[in-house]
Image (cartoon, helix red, strand yellow):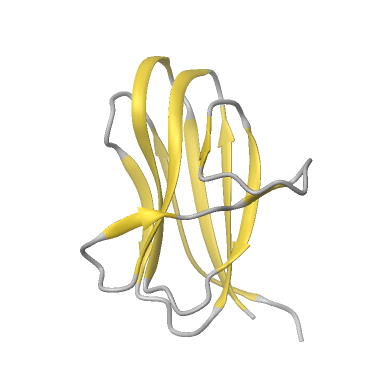
Length: 108
């Protein structure tokens, strides 16, 4: 059975603390984050159980087997959502550029 894309969001970052986020997962699945454009910024991957409190969330980059909780360059990352209620990719530090952050959730 193919995965079904249920939720997605895309933003262009222009300041710290802006985030692409998805809340209210109906079931466990997988999430993907892609960062494109130009950036001098840090995008932090975060997860929540209660929809309010966010914690670091390790994701696997498409070109490596080493998980990371943040990114400072363009690329794509994936991870299973487990029992989390939401995932976000938040700009935790911003200097310049216009990174485009796309986040997508698909049910398994």
